[in-house]
Image (cartoon, rainbow, N blue to C red):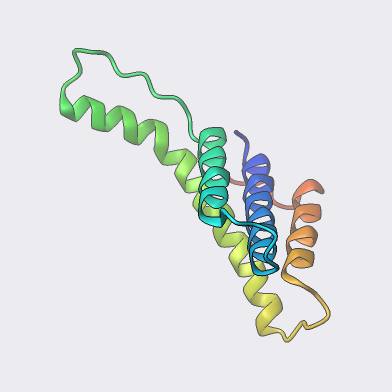
Amino acid sequence: MERAEVLKRVIGILTEAQEIRRAAEAGEEDDTPETEARVVTQLLNEMLPSISVPADSSPAQVARLVAEALGPALHTMVAGFSLAFTSLAMAHDGGRTDLSSIEVLQQLALEVEAGNYDGGS
């Protein structure tokens, strides 16, 4: 999955998590932990690659294969969450009371869509 797609999925899961939390606080959602777990599971299934390990692999070979497969995906995913967190923190620290957190995430999504974060892996 390309970096911009990962960033969009991260923004999507953060936005969805906020909507789940708001629904729970309003009494509209009864199974918040299960719903949140389902959203996170879906995110991981979409973002993490499949790994094929030969049956005769040694433990060291399995570790190497897993690290090679998951390392770049996890790095990109963590970078996406870091970017989103930083964007939200900057808005908060700047005293931006005119923007909700969802609006900050929407602005970030527009920047990603415009190609502002296409560099890197």
